[in-house]
Length: 170
Ligand code: FES
Ligand code: FES
Image: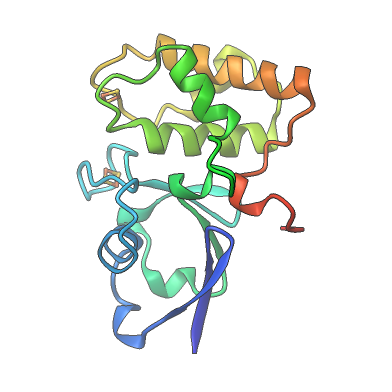
């Protein structure tokens, strides 16, 4: 049986789903609509999810390749008690969300950056998010949000780890 970890839980994957893209698998089989379909061509970043700690475009990632791996979508960022992750909170506080379509991908790309580099410069943030397009914000508030999230987690000693993984070793 094919298995993978999805937002901290082990799930089984049917053989018939192995040829789907993760974008379609997550939306159509698991109803995770935070995984956005912007272009389905690997161009916009709105379908970004985290695969084994790396930001990946789910529209270009076959389910087959995800077997045995750990996936996090925006739905996995919040804590089991319903509190949002500090990165999500910072996006709201910094006014970095307008229509919200790009936000899940932006938050997850920021998450991967902060996992690797908890105190990035604005330039490093810009670079990490450059593959994620936003038609609304002009990007400045998004950079502000990631900077704010880094500061809050640092100042309050909060772990970067996604809410669904809190209490787990991975
Ligand atoms: S939907 Fe995947 S990159 Fe645009
Ligand atoms: S907030 Fe609308 S696309 Fe970014």
